[in-house]
Length: 478
Image 1 (cartoon, one colour):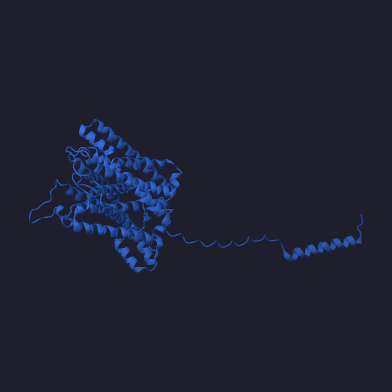
Image 2 (cartoon, helix red, strand yellow; image 1 turned 180 degrees about the vertical axis):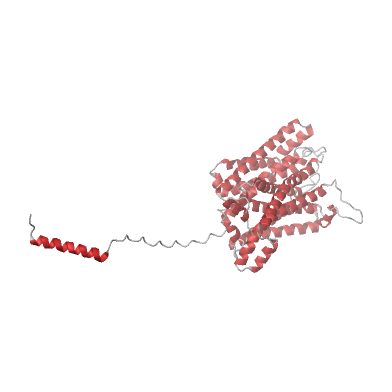
């Protein structure tokens, strides 16, 4: 078959063009992959707010107003103490037979808060529970502040506070030794052991975080603050030897907290049990005082956890699970109080007539509303925390926590004043009613408690930083 000349020319031209392209360009090389893009710059890790907050130069108007309110309470405390020194205990509403009033009521109440908070923190440390990373630090601080507030009352109860050294077993040239059968001497040993052990427990756990504050303050150029934190950190450098000794000391002090709390609270209860008053002279009184103080301490810790989490931005350290678990522990402690109140009523039925009448006077007499209010606030109100939806509402948690603490205070009022309504002798004189100076003294100690906690939150980490690192890294040893 013959092709037209034109087609032959076109085919020859196309073949020539392809041959020329192959000779000119050579074999085709695969295209190189595109160069990888530079990775986006990594952002610096967010600073731990527990460390960053104390190093802030400004804390805002909210903190200023809170500190001013607490300072007003401290001023009220100073005014109440000055009036007592000038006029004596006659300013109080105590009378015969109500020789113990707000001085002992508030003392037992503050000691109960301190004991419950310390016991909770010590158990978490000894069990190495994960909740310790969230609540231990400010629970220990709350316990220490409560002990300071409680320690004022036995001294003021003396009437001549400047002679408080008479209860100390010091070598006296006049051989005037303390009367060891006196409950004032018991209070001295109970409070001093509480202050020493609680203070050591709080400070020992704080040492590594003080070193962190020292380094962060130096990095920011705040050398004066770095020097202060450095002195308080006791030369901490984070070596293996330092960590080993710290962990051993921390757990040793935590173990010492347990017998100290039992002895300190039972010493307070024995002040009632060793008397011949029918409503007090019972072997179950120490157990009642120890266990009914749990809702007060846990309630204060729960309220502090919610407030600190919201105001200082500690949602990463105090998460929803921590608050939820703390709320359920609060509800469980309320059930223990229910058992104790039921045990009191059941035991009264088996007691002699004088004790039975004393218990009836306490719950049905002039102070009966206080006992029923204590049952409602410490037993019934915390049961709302079993509802999961309520455990997520911050105002509800704060209200229930503080309400439980108030309920324990009502129980102490009912125990001290209501226990004297029915005695072996006919009662003479009016019932006990707290006076204005006594209310001022109570508000003053509450202001002192809040003032100490505000200073703690301003200058120190309210959450354990080194424990948080343990929890985030999954390691037991830093």
